[in-house]
Image 1 (cartoon, rainbow, N blue to C red):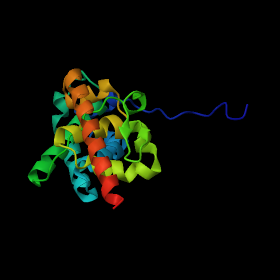
Image 2: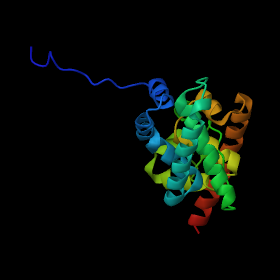
Image 3: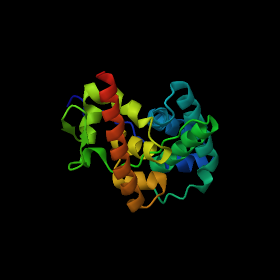
Image 4: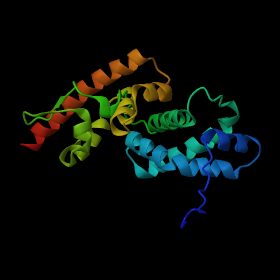
Length: 203
């Protein structure tokens, strides 16, 4: 049969790659970097708000993760551990620049149903619809950059990256109750910011 002899290339798991790195195979870390570099960069740019700064943050995050890899115990997923390092580096970068840092606590974008935000035009939209709607995409991202540090991060992870409650808690290392409180407050702040933007834009 045609194609019956076709072989499928094996893709090593994160755990296997980590074991190889710890055994001295540095090339395997390059595989991990390639696997997660886009995600790490995206998180960084949404927190620091600058492509150039995000590149620096991502590079620094991968360097720090490599150095700390021997201490990674595997209690959580490697990706969650790496995202936490990237988030911390992004926030540190913001503080060094003396800019208003924003950390966003997020529930799980695609699972939000009851919570809505008034878009300033008399319409209500759920957070995930706002993120996906072309008309609001830029406004939402700009508004997120105005949030206080702890709220920017949760919003980035929960709504923009669509991570679940469990994943965000693992990445940020905060209690579930704290996450939900941050999300609740961040939604109120976003509503105020978007409403103000809409009112000013209509003048």
